[in-house]
Amino acid sequence: MSNIEQHTIDKLFRDLSRVYSTSATSMIGLASIKTAIEELVCNDNDLATEIRKLSDAVKNTQPRMFPLDNLMLILDKEIQTLNDEKQLSKGSIDKILNTFRIRMKSDLDALVDHGVEWIKNDDFIVIHSIEENIEHLIPEAKKRGINFKILVLKQDIVTTGKILNILNNNQIKYEVIPEYDLVHYFDKITKLFIGTQALTNDNYLICDPGTSNVVSECHIHNIPIVLFLKTLKLSHYPATDQNIRKNSFQDEHDGVEYSFSIHSNDIIKLELMNHIITEKGEITIDQIPTILDQIIAEY
Image 1 (cartoon, rainbow, N blue to C red):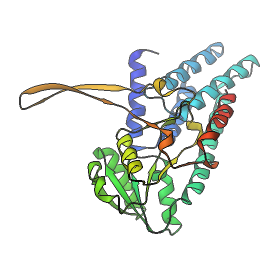
Image 2 (image 1 turned 90 degrees about the vertical axis):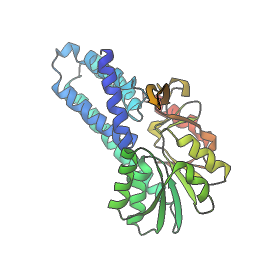
Image 3 (image 1 turned 180 degrees about the vertical axis):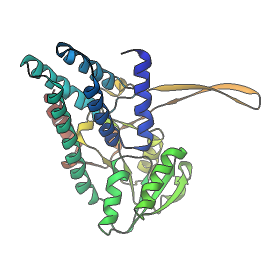
């Protein structure tokens, strides 16, 4: 795959993650992979090679996209097995992708069921970005009759607009403030909810830009920080190998030209989390290596 094609895939995933959770983005990615394989024109002998090229492109995105990255590693193993047994076909690959979609939906449903337990009447919960907690968990809590309010920390107009649409559509009470105004709410808020794009094998979270500052402030002020994490987001890579992208720009103000840079993601220590909620329920940091070993064993 050419650098231009890889760059296009990277940008598509980054754009999608601005308005969807990484799980939703991964589901969109799976649907796109399914379509690409259906439309692939090649000899049967070249099918495994062509699908691996597609898998490699997904695994090399900037930043890495989980859970899709792990699913592609599992797919690589399945392709090798099917190819060795002379059973590889578009139909057999389609069955694997369907299994992935079912697994992701099941994991999400379980995460929401466990997560709703962390929303209580009269909670005032801080939300910073779009992840499973805002897409599914908070609307489900509203459906169950829990009375709570959301404090939305304003980001770019696209991301904040998506959050507000979800809250409005589900008739959830909220207030919007700039991130720097959070200092005036520490006597009112009850929890910070965050998601993550990945949990690295050296115990760092890969999160949306700005999340690190919010987590640090809440930690200092003893606000409980609740992480919602599907275990397929556990990464076998360290934080230094998550393909975090640095973007640099040129700008001008009052005749002064300057350059500035922004990274695609923040890196946050897992130890700052007070609670880690997964599709398996609440887990501790000590349990994570065993869970990661189980995921790695799949590929």
